[in-house]
Image 1 (tube, rainbow, N blue to C red):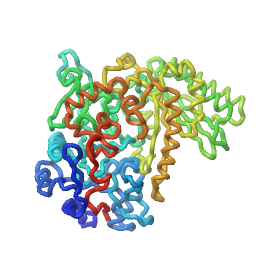
Image 2: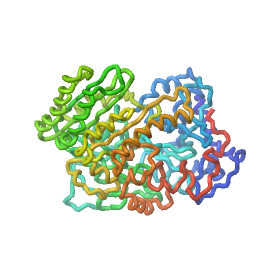
Image 3: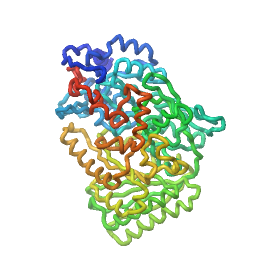
Image 4: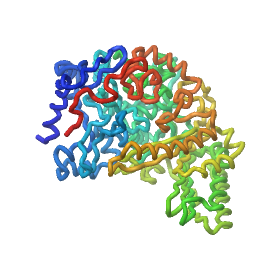
Length: 615
């Protein structure tokens, strides 16, 4: 038996030491019961829960734990080192997040509790924000048992699928985890009618995904029946296909043709806060269906499965544009002109069915721009003409400016979306990308009216930021272009947007970050995000890719839909069992989501158990 296996029972029994800690008075009406508090469930309580589950109880641990318990030379530590930046591996760890700052915890005195991969730092492996116990759900019955148990004991609930999250909604210090990662059933329906729908409302080849299904699995299933669907785009396809991505809205390179994920949702099955399994559609539990489409992950219920419409699988025209200014981190005049032409063409590109992504990456060696966009438009000739105008502008700029290096401006046809996806390597199983490090973002949805009216102002604002930029041409189009702003809980800003712009930084924790170092990084991101807010002050943000520092989350994430969304939450989660950072109802809670704002803090964020280090 490994040392990890040996120590896990000790972690389960650690609450018995709570009498050694400060016996703070915690009101069950105002504060959650956290690990180590006298109210924490007993061993017999957990045994009773375990008897109702299909799998043993989880004991999540920070992913670097083996390097401290088994030692830095152990096989388990070697696996952690070799897999640290692998999104597939991280998704398979109940205690891991894709962005590692959410595995840590900052105390009010600004010290940070964490379990760093670098064991030479000389600090103990702390639990950070990793929940102490949880349920490895394999179906609705497991989720129902978990939800009822959490509600009975007033626990802090954490719902997690893969750990892809930029707002820290999949962690929770002292909490109770419901892990849906292993709920993997996929069903393709020859014909499908949503719950409560009239008999003449049917959809061909709809697909039902349980909440643990990841995009690479969903894409394999839909490609096998020669269809395509709206979905996320990450290396390895490790983002959950029926969890937080969907509930936050869900954008795609195909969104200008087919809409967002929430526009393609036909039916969704969830477990509500009282442990009831509910199926919601436009015809049944319609208010819940309204709230789940854009109301955000972890806020209203636990998803069991989601059913999407699929689409025909047409040929794809892909376009690639790359240019740079070498030897400097600022664009040359020609690079500015080429970038300005790209921004000015956004409306025409969208109208021709183009969607995809562009990046501005300033480094000491070069200022770089790259774009890869696709169009499944039925009129590929028109699509080609619109993008060729952008290429022509870039070539003209390069001809006038020797400092501008234009390395690629070309289109490539693909037989299908899947062929393009595979050719660009997004199906790579190694899935090594920008995970395994702390990552923070800021973002804004840019209205079409703004870009069409003053593209030069938009381009100048973006180029004026000293930041890495991701420009996402993912505004909902096709049938979704006419969807009313109040048709679902999604921010109405999406319906008038042409693009999403993201700024952000990735940094390392190899030296063990201090609070001051993290604050400096967040300050830079916030400065760039402020530029975006000033550029589009009346717009909003995509809930899944935004800043943790957004000052008015209700407005930017939900806009005028927030009051109605709050009413949906009051109906289906009246005791606010499901509360996440910046989610609906979170304004009623303190920063750690442990106590209601009118309640008193028990311990300033400390676990009541004095033994908070794992080793």
